[in-house]
Length: 448
Ligand code: NDP
Image 1 (cartoon, rainbow, N blue to C red):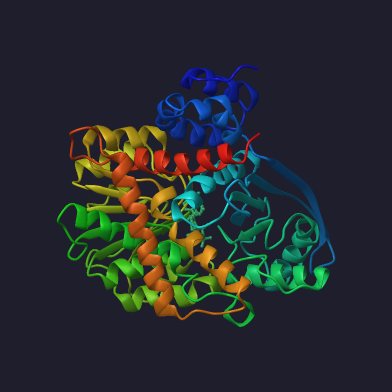
Image 2: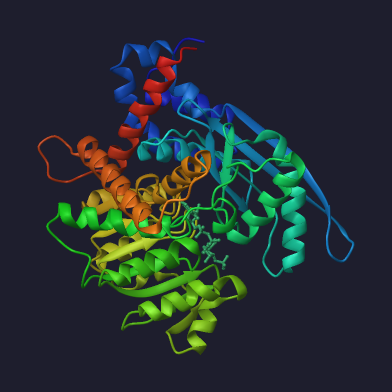
């Protein structure tokens, strides 16, 4: 087949092959519109068919997880690892355990991950994996049994220099511990094969906080570029997990008023702003509670509103930190009507493409997750390098490195995202183009 060289041809080619994979097509579409002109202007990219090679995963591993739960019943789940692209380093990206996990979701996440990892400047390829297992309401023992069964299958496909998974939705420190224990038992090797590990067995300081903290460091860079500050701004946050809570904490430390958190069941609203103590309490307790936001209401930290999302609440800054496509066109319009001027994604692809268009039309600042939530994988990269050296850096050093990396990503976005003569910065274009150049150059240099 000849090299495809225009947006429609390339997109139609992918659409025809993967027409049922809507999240994957959405993620690819979002990137293609920005990178096709760069591709067409470069003969080497075209002659080596870089776009098609970059859009399709190098390898997809599918497995069935048959396991016995603590009641002695047999359960059967589906698991995947999408090893998308390794031109820049070992595949790197999280594992998600959620009933909505399917191949399309993991392919979109793995594709995005390649771009995000490229932006960090660290040698990491991109991948993503997970299972359709729902850990909600399960005993600790069932979680351990499932993690062990999952790793029995996954272990033969990963390795410190091959593929290094981390956490994602419903995969936190506890799950990484169980997964790592099983890997070590089966392979008789202590190596940096997973990141997000406990500090006692090769984990890194600041990894737990890195995605949320990094998001706020990026926000600070955005504010600096606009001669503004985070202090005094009203911020709405969606989600009440790892990313949301650490973003809320750092925003609050920087003097912002964080008025919401949310989850799949509703919203916690505190008009006065959650205190650092409130958010710290949530961080310390959310893993042990079914719905930490209801408990926060009981503790007098805000008002619970069942089945609500945060997007109708008046704010200066919105940080969607829960899941993909959680913020649609109507939500985007409501945010703009209420005076919101900055939207930075903590989650992966939380804004629909129509919502993004509303932001671009209104010329408000919109930063895609592949740039603004890259702090997590950046710290994972630093965890890998510490593991390779059998060392452990201190928290202060790592926090400084995280800030440096987020500022670096911000600068890349500004350089590539400034539209001719205008002051408006298109962070999405900036992130897509900067990452694409790095990935494409790595692919070209390594030949077919
Ligand atoms: P967690 O599992 O810690 O938290 C997820 C949160 O999102 C929970 O509050 C959950 O609520 C909520 N949520 C899940 N599904 C929905 C839904 N359909 N509607 C509304 N809320 C929902 O995950 P993380 O904080 O780790 O991840 C959040 C996002 O950030 C994901 O998009 C992830 O890919 C992305 N991300 C994570 C990184 C990390 O380092 N952990 C790195 C970069 C990106 P409930 O408890 O009710 O299900």
